[in-house]
Image (cartoon, rainbow, N blue to C red):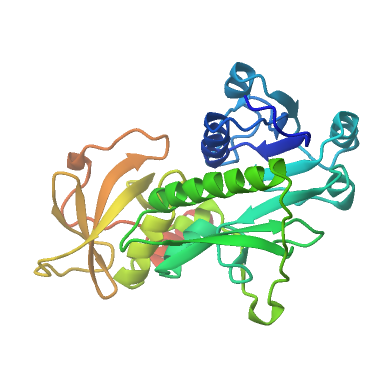
Length: 326
């Protein structure tokens, strides 16, 4: 690895995006001193979790394991190593002031939106749900707020039509890697990094998303539901509904080109080699690549033509009341 920097650079990350960035930096001879990450196998609540220990051990990168970067133990270990910069490759916890002050220079944060638009949570699913044709990865100096720091630069990219979230994820990972490499070169070549305040008159903030937000609702329009399925597909938990008292996840979706079948909401109208055609509020969608909740693929014979997906809430309440009143 290169030894042309007298600055001690740390990275922090625990997901697939972090791996792609770290791999890119190492391939381009960047000297990364330490990675702050989750302990092996500790947190499967990170939907795109990736264990980076083997990679770091192979490339002689020191590791600090933590489940809380703001803990006294983690801060003490970081201070002991006297780092200068931190590259945030992929981490969901908010950094508190004591953690920020561990680094003699500053922490470089990133967010995959054109800040100040789209601050907050779940930026990639929201990008698809909002139907954006262009976005950016924003690099900024971390402060005490959430995505509020001074901008360093933004790397814009185009979003293809009918894109799945994994494709946007890959675009973002590449922009992150190249952006951090550019910053590494600035630091090691002792070039000044310039900052620009965000325009707080144009702020938008996106809310948190949870797996239950992936529920497929048949009384909604096909365009909204088609975007939802693409937005929460792999590496996220997927869009789902219920059938035969099982949770069914559909990983891909397509519009109905023929428009020749009509039925009641949630009704299975037709089958193909990969999925089923289902009635929604204003048209039909092909719901494809079904799996059970445990990831096992579902054979299409499991679905019966004419059956309805989902639950009829009023009927279910009626039967439940009858059972309770017995």
